[in-house]
Structure formats: structure tokens, C-alpha cells
Amino acid sequence: MVRNLMHPHIVPYTHVRELVASPNIQIFMPVYEGNLYNLLEEPRVDGKEGVRNIISQMLYQMLQALDFVHSRNPQIIHRDIKPPNILYRGNNFFLTDFGIAKAVDTSNTVVGTPNYMAPEVREKREQTSKVDIWGLGVTVVACLENPKDFEEEGSRTDGEKWYEYLQKSLSQHHSSSLASMVSVDPDGRPAADELLRQHWPTGATLSSAAAPLSPQPSGTITPVLMDWVRTVTETQPARPVKRKRSSYDAQLPPPKRFHLMDNVDSNPEGQRRIFTLFRGEHTFSGLIEWTTAMPKTLEPCLAVVEERLPTDENRPEEARTLVFNHFFNDGPRIGLVYKCVEQPIDLREAITRIPKPSPEHRRALGRTIATQVRSLYVHFQINHPALRTESFIFFVNSDPNLTTPYILDWARLASPEMYQHPEHQAGKPLWSDHVWSLMMVLSEIADWKPLEKEILDHAELRSRKLERKRLVTNPSWKDAMTAEFFQFGFEFLEKDRSTLEEYSRWKVKRFYDRLCKLLEPL
Image (cartoon, rainbow, N blue to C red):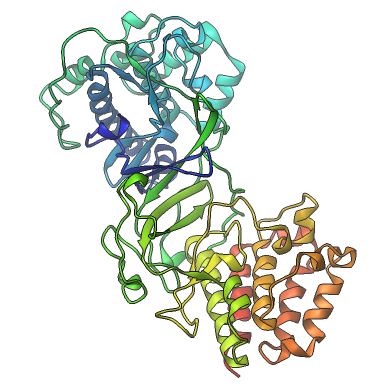
């Protein structure tokens, strides 16, 4: 049903996939520049006036979207309107996170984000479309006020004082007529179409008009409510992904730890997590290059490549499914599924099946992979959350010499233990632990032998002395990669943890530059 909500200001769901061996659901949708908080965080030359213009534009477009869903039959009520659920691209805003729509027996369940809950939701009274008007009004307040002050005010005040704070903020900072959006009495709140007629009587020039509503059947039907379980505290908005290549060396804070978002759907078999993946466009050397059309980079590698939009029932059994995700600071942001006729193999499988290549070949492969990880880190500020040999795949029919690896990830939270830094295993993860994982992958390439878990369970390895000694002194490694390379890598990892925590990204970039230099042909 949610897939049928086609509107210029509602994020479309392109495809939904239910996993066979898991209770999880994957939802595919377009990629956007960020959410409303991200946009307001960006430096502005027009100051407060620019912020007000953004809010006015957002308000108009969100009222269009709410008018659309509230006019459906059965009526759809979002119930979790807030800045993180409003995305933007250019000058347009889009309502998202509808989750999985379901008709509920009662309309007085307590769902949503506390600071954005309407009074009738808190008090478990009947809920109507007016709860979305309240949420949008609170969203305007959250954007006008300092986010930190807004959260603190919401945590220390409750009831009438909180409602007075919201009404006062709307009256002072925006428009006294908008204060009715946060009226305690639902009947005192105007509907979305009333607000549109009141504030934009002749139509707005800020956005294209909404598509005409489809004729809806007459009759009274129980509204469809969006069922939510809040699993992630959103007290601090995530920063948008930086794509400007001129700022590679800018000093940025360490990225947030990877976490999964965010909705849980109840079904007869229990709860299942809903993963939201986005379609978009990211291209640079070494990564699978793809757009909304056929990816040119994969054309020589695959006999057939096409976007996977049909349902699982329509998918031929012999077709391989390849999922590629970028993991940004605030969770999965990009995803695409390709139907591949040729079956790829991963690096671990290649090491097991293919005879040991020449030292020059192994050295070149190691440098290619190190360069790819460097590109992820430097160009897109992405820490690969589960780096391991299985993260690199090849299409051997078109690439028998294994010269073109592609990076991918299978939505794992962390690398397997054998690729984790010993202190990471001890519960002390660090944002630069992917450097250790990369060194482990390169060690497998150098020795052309899969890493054995038993080796890493050894007590001496936890102090990192045995592994460093083995990598630096074992002659079988030197024919492919110099001892200097491993000495350099592990000296980086031997840094005091508190010192390493303070490393800025440009220092890690210099590490990768030096590491790739050491892997150049002899």
C-alpha cells in the first residue's frame, strides 16, 4: 500500500524484498542529500532569514504531502513527523519513514517520538490526522530553536508548560497563525488543506504543485496508522555525507559508530527489522560504478546486468543476487541489487581455489585493494564496518588474472573476529580499527593463504607482538610485500590508543598514501 503513495513530496519505495532465511525486510528507495537537520546545520550567508525561507518552503511541501495522505480512503496517518523523517534534494523536501502500513484495531496506541507526540497520543485518546499537524508544528519549532536547547526543554518540561513553550515559539519566531498547529485540542488544529488555503491561497512558487489526487471511493473506513517502535535515540542529527573532493584533507571528527535504523514491524511470527536502503550514484576508481541505468563498469564483467525490481517470486533461481551497500556514518544509505548471470567469487574463495600468483601480481593486487579502502576513507569518509577477504569479489570469466576487485558488503555489523583488532574483541572498538582489518586482508594476499581463526585466538596475538613479528620476519611474505610495509603498518597500529583516537583524518590519509607507496612495483 505504501508503494502506491506516489506524490512529488513523498519518498517512493522502489522495491521491497523479504529475505528467505531471515525475518528482515529490505526496502529500496532513492538517495537524498540528507535530512532537514542536516540542511539547517550547513553554514548560511543569509542567516536567520535563510533558515525561515527553508522552513517556509519545507512547511508548504510537507502540507501538500500530508493533504495527500490524509485525503486517502482509508486515511493514512504518519504519526512520526520530525526533522529526521523529512529528506531534501536541492530545493525540494520529501516525507519518508512510512515504514510498513497496517490497519490497527484501535487508534489509541502510543507510538512516535516523545517530543513530537500530540497530547492525545500521550493520553492514549483517539488519534486522527491532526496528530500529524501537531508533529509538523513541533518540527517547525525544532528547526527554529537550537536543537540542543529544544531537546533539553523537552526533557525537563512536560504537560502544559511544554505545550505553552511550543505555542510561544511558533508565535514569536514564525507566525502567530501557525500556533494553532500545536493546539492542545485536536479540533482546534487546522487540517493540512486549510493551512494551504490560509497561507498559500493562490498557490506557491516555492515548489511545483502536488499531483492531483486520485479519485477515492466514498464511505467511512478506519484510518490506516503507521506502527512504530523507536529503537535509536535521535538527540543529535547526523552530519551529511561530504562529497567535495577539494576537502579531502580537512580535519573532521571521528565518524559515529555504525548503527542500524530503525523500524520494527510486528507480524504473527514476531518482530522483524526493516532495513531501508537507498538508490543513488557514487563513482570512483575501484568501486562498482552504477547509476539508475546499466553500470558501464560492469558491462565487460557480466553477461546480463539489470536493475532488480521484480519480486522474489519472479526471480529465476539461477540468477545471482549481488548487493552493494555504502555504510555512512549514520547507517546504510545506498543499496542496489543486480541480477548477475555470471557468479562472482570473493577473495577468500580465490585464495583457496586459485594457485598462488607471482609476487608481482600479489603486490599489485594488494596495492589495488589498499587504494580502494583509501578511496572509501578519504573520498567519502566511509569506514568499512566489516572489512575482510569476502569484502572483495571478482568475475573470473572476464577477469581471470584477478586485477579488478569490487568492494561490497553483506550488511554485517562488524568484521569476523579473525579480522578484528584484539582490543576491539575486548570491547574497546576504535574508529580506525579498519586499518587492522586491512592489514589482515593484505597478509592473506601476501601469503596466499586464508587467515586461520586459531592463530588469532593465541594469547600472544592479543598483545600484537606475535603477529607483527611473523609478518615482518617470515621470508614467504617478503617475495610479495616488503618487510618495511608490514613494519610501517603495525607501527601505526602500535600507537597508544588514546593518541590514535585523536588522529585526524588527514593523518590517516597520509598513512594510506604511504602504505600504497610501499606497495608500488619494485
